[in-house]
Length: 88
Image 1: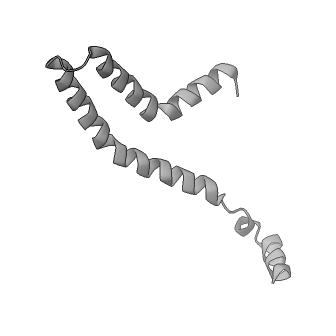
Image 2 (image 1 turned 120 degrees about the horizontal axis):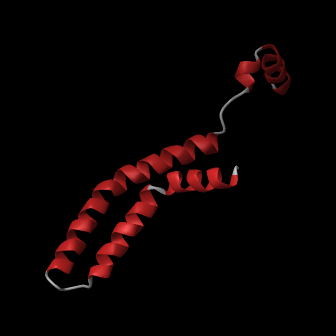
Image 3 (image 1 turned 60 degrees about the horizontal axis):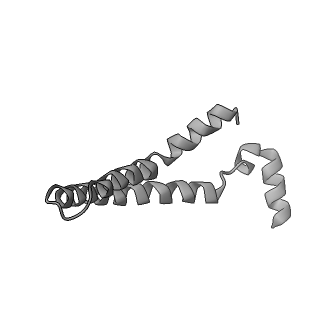
């Protein structure tokens, strides 16, 4: 069976160049996680903003929630920006 796979891979090299399953799975998991967390993030900003408005918590909590959301949803862009700075 391995011999047949090797022969087919040498005849049709495009079939031997499959994508890494872990990369595809990680990308899909990241997209699913972000899709689920988007409404949760919006609700969190509204709840913490209302609590800060009524004086139940300090305004720094709202700033912390917003910074956390920016870091969560912007992590790919931040990594790309840092890699671009160092030429990697």
